[in-house]
Amino acid sequence: MKVFKLGSLIALLAFVLSSCDIIDEPVCLDCQAEASEMKILLEDFTGHLCGNCPRAHEQLEVLKASYGENLIIVGIHAGGFAKVFPAAGYIPDYTTSMGDELEEYYGADIEGLPVGMVNRRTWQDGKVLQKFAGWGTQISTILAETPPLSIGLTAVITDQILRVDAQVGYFEAGTADHHLVIVVTEDSIFSKQSDYDVPDGYIPNYHHQHMLRGSITPGNWGEQLKPGAIQAGEIFNKEYQLTWNSDWDSNNCHIVAYVIDNITKEVLQAEEIIING
Image (cartoon, rainbow, N blue to C red; front, top):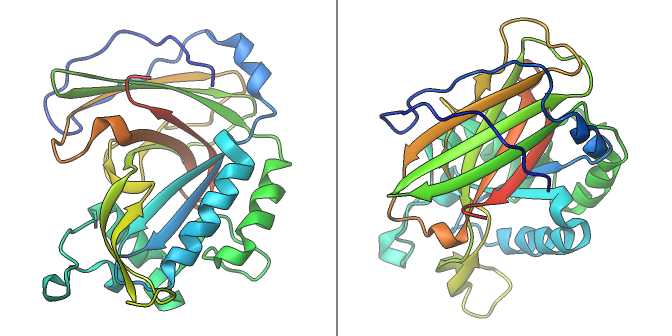
């Protein structure tokens, strides 16, 4: 992935304290070279009490092996199957306020887990939520399209402060409804997971991957890039800081950024990097 050099950092004082817009003459004209590279966001609603969810997780890893960096996965632990159940050994709480709002907004529990969203697009059946058997076809459909924008990221932790710089460059015109969303995900978390296909009905040290940990941008639907129409060739620089949560292993964490149309909620482009990479 191409990493863009961004502007100076503004000191921030809370989890997400502020951001700044810089709309200059385009500083990454060579980013047009990435114009044909679409990145897909696949959000998987899951939970440690969901005994069918490991089959979706297996499919995710197959798809990741096939599509590599073009597929970005976020595992959203939310809803009834994500509740803690200490008496049965399901102790960690992997839910987040963002995941809870997404689950309620899209009705994942009502649809029935495992279920996910591919770029939050509405498909021919009129639904955004889709079963994992169809994810591969949906990914290949979107990958054949030309993205309207590109996202560049850097992420560094210094003295327990995470600094994330993002640059969004437009190849096509956009609207005032475009929002930038940036989240933290974590891999290699081990704890009990229900699994109906194993003899005991659960796996005691299940390997949880791509877990949503929290939002870096304000709120759960991101930050508006511009209050008016966006012109082709415009560049937006965003800078954020947050105090790092010591419960998260930074060696296993990623920063995921994506731009949505905040009316349709569809994802227009996504990007992912490791921290201190």
